[in-house]
Image (cartoon, rainbow, N blue to C red; front, side):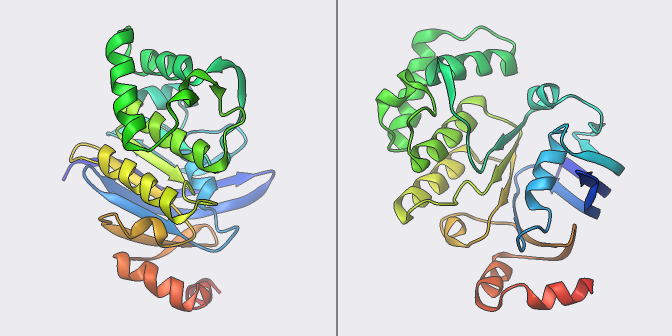
Length: 248
């Protein structure tokens, strides 16, 4: 398979605290990866460091995307190259409708003008599939949206922007069973042999309707165990204690 993302011996910190401590990860096209771990292990830090969030500092190591070192590339340029990240708590953005936000983002990523009629037709298709209220796209981005609506809107953005790598940071948190099924459906709609997904999660419900290639356990800033979906069920039953001991 073609390599999409390579992370080699990555060390990173935030507010002068070292969080990632020699993390290694390879993701190929066509794969779904899941990262699990206790609170404070560095899961969300990893997502932010990949996108070069300036609040995080890379100390050493390399992040290679499609053969290119993206360590020092600005966040918006990384997004243009095809990396998408959904947020645990999507922000409200008053003054811009969801529709205009999506059109603007699509323009920037594709470098081509969006044809309004075709774009609205595509949006309607995705909105119907995600069981979203169609009136939401006319409202200001995430303003007054419920938690579930915000998370579905993140999946809608992923489908519209068609990234090469989608990083989903606890997109399932705070959602009921039906909403999680919808999010999983959106991931399956997006997934193909030329892209990849990295899911950061605390529980297994989002995995029930997904084909997962690898589950990684992240403890104290590094991946200490990799397996298949069975590893996630083991964690659900027994917790992280034995993997914490590996690091002690």
